[in-house]
Length: 311
Image 1 (cartoon, rainbow, N blue to C red):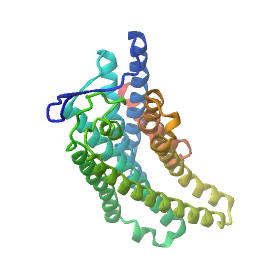
Image 2 (cartoon, one colour):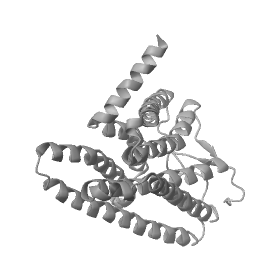
Image 3 (cartoon, one colour):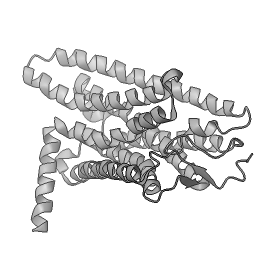
Image 4 (cartoon, rainbow, N blue to C red):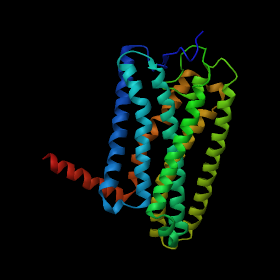
């Protein structure tokens, strides 16, 4: 029996036991991580350097890419290092940092996706008021609110989780420090406090989700009223990438936390956690650049500049 005050490390769930499979896991995660770094880095650089992309939509996209980089950098490098060095250990402080940063970046990202839905709603349903409602100062305040929401949420959950006595060992059945897995190590009923926070989070999550759904119902209603096919296509092209990212984010998180207990196992939980914490940050840049001609042109020019400078 151990207490949280005497714990100095946790043991994470390993992807594989043999060295060959550990190197395979390292290689796969390295490829995904580099893809996420490249994709999000290109979007951040393109939006920052191209004055034509200095609009609210691309400002929020830049913030989304920063959050995606933070999300994948919180969990993947440590998992790769553990596979490379054949260890499962993470320090107590490292685990605390992971819990805080995971909630910080995920909370900020979901809040930002809600703000981006509002941006698309104003752009399509109230275009005459767009300049007033989505001015530079308003956009900065909305982005700051999204980051602040993530920070406050992370602070509350981290402080509450690690104030609970832990006496059921130090093995976390996940490849990163995840609160539900840490709560299983609790030896008291004080985990009900964390359960209360999770209920509040669920209510906020549902509220944001309903806001996004209602916004898109009004958006699609307005788009279908546009007389020209070209106008409808342009409106859809600015909304569909965001809707795809929201769908990917929400569906993976819901499946991870609301899947039936009958299909729950360490292996399934591991794969699902990869699905919601690793895949979206790597795929989001591709989703946003696939149908966005302005962003594609900015990225093409950026790559040309880099190639010319190297020559």
